[in-house]
Amino acid sequence: MEIRFILLGLALIWCLHCEPSEQNIFPVSLVHRFSDEAREVMISRNGADVVNGGGAGQAWPRKRSSEYYRRLLSNDVQRQTLKLNPQFQYLYPTKGSATLPLGNDFGWLHYMWIDIGTPSVSFLVALDAGSDLFWVPCDCVECAPLAASFYSSLDKDLNEYNPSDSSTSNPLSCSHQLCELGPNCPNPKQQCPYTINYYSDDTSTSGFLVEDVLHLMPGHNDASNKSVKAPVIIGCGSKQTGGYLNGVAPDGLLGLGLGEISVPSFLAKAGYVSDSFSLCFNEDDSGRLFFGDRGIAGQQTTPFLSLDGKNLTYVVGVEACCIVSSCLEHTDFEMLVDSGTSFSFFPVQVYKRVVDEFDGQINASRSSFEGYPWQYCYKSSSLGVPKIPSLVLKFSANNSFVVNNPVFVIYGTQGAVGFCLAVQPTDGNLGTFGQNFMTGYQIVFDREKDMLGWSHSKCLDLKNGGGPVGNSPNTLPTAEQQSVPKGHAVAPAFAGRTPKSSASCGSHMAKLFVVLLLMLHVS
Image 1 (cartoon, one colour):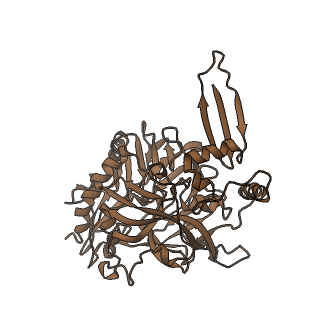
Image 2: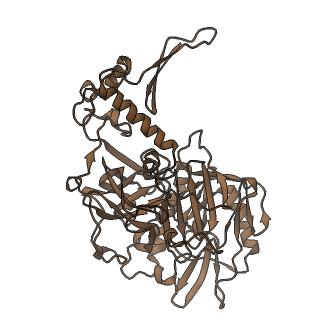
Image 3: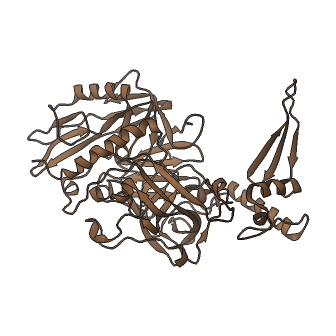
């Protein structure tokens, strides 16, 4: 067997020839990235016209020409940038770092305003650590309503992206390395199509990929206070289905996953910030997003794990679950950390042990509330909701994550009438660490160190000297937030990368949640 490696910058193309010898000795030949052999490989992949400079492509440089050395130097500089300190301590959108909880109208997820293009246009996008693509409604064939009159939470219309209106917008060709559907294109020069299917009630987005700029601001410790125009890839979402037509992410979604196409990946590769970001959701429903933030000294951490041998998303390993100080046997499992899932899921066997212990410690009578999907619900007393036993997730190195208030409070016209343990069982061995568990914490996704970090926080703005302080309990939507006069009941969003084992249960929960959110009052 001969193995041939063609070095193309950071990319590696390999081809195999012949059968392995009896001694299992494999000769290896290295091929220069601008050699004739590498050129032939690129022609076979992308077509001669693209390699020779047709369309938006760059022509293959002549050996030892000035362009040849310029391209090599440019590649070296780009590689070196990745090794040096990033340009900024952290970045956040020009409209501010604050996230917005928009309640029933928008599927209980957190959103923020993002500016893209030249001139810039603002989009109210959902934050999703469980998927990769950043997409917005664009050249709409089938999109959610964008008029403010359709949503009780908005005071202005949402926007639709038009690539032709942005001077910095360029179509992504099928020959681009990040075009997953490129091999299916009839012509490599055509614009790259995309389709993302999310595991929730046939929810999807499809359209074409474009390159444009994302407008960001540097942190308070950075010398320059000028905005940063960071090139990223954006999904021009012309057709949405399922939940995306019924209130979830009507103005787009910001994928924060590990894929090369995600915004955190672009910012880190370009050397703008460290390969990390933080999300913070406060007990009053406020929140923050900071690109490049690696948290504070002393924060607790646990490593990200591979899933089926691949690092596709943010998965952590729970060693045991505890109710207060009572840690339960046989409650170890893996969890997907996903801000795009409203609530949390445990594998069935773990779920049974946890709810039995919770039920034994809670000082309240079991009850049921029609339309609510959770199995363990309780009546409130005349004094209100009793003290809730804390749910603790134990990780490696004796690190613990305390979910101080893991319940959903049910409100009636006279106040709280009951509450439910806001955890659902799911088939398979993979649970989901949803948004409700994150409340009261600064959650750090350190992709460079492959670590999840957390610390108690009130989610103050970093530029005002805020940091993780205090010990904040979790609080879910208030009575006023549940009672939306013009509300449109929708299912909560679920992560695009959630494996099907968790997704099937998530889909059922989403359907039940339509009924749940229609119940604006419980008398």
